[in-house]
Image (cartoon, rainbow, N blue to C red; front, side):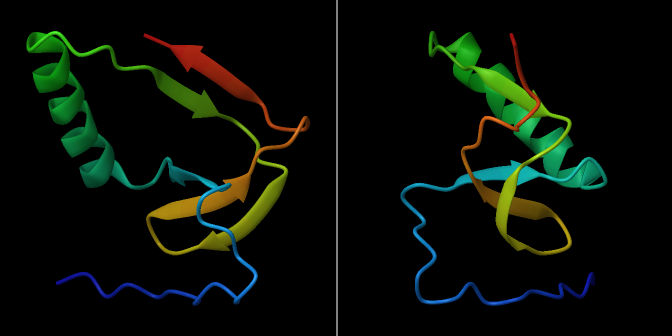
Length: 80
């Protein structure tokens, strides 16, 4: 069992504005995400995948993911 350390977001954290990203070290989560992408595309859904080398406004993170508000400093790249 993997123990997850997490910091609870503060009250002003706006989940509707934040984008959640998997950390590159979250191998199993990313593998499962790609399986879901495959199934969605198989059934005709358009799926856009984005990668980001650097996030400017990180507001929360745990062992597997980060939440960040969009920023012009983000190094976001869209892939298909």
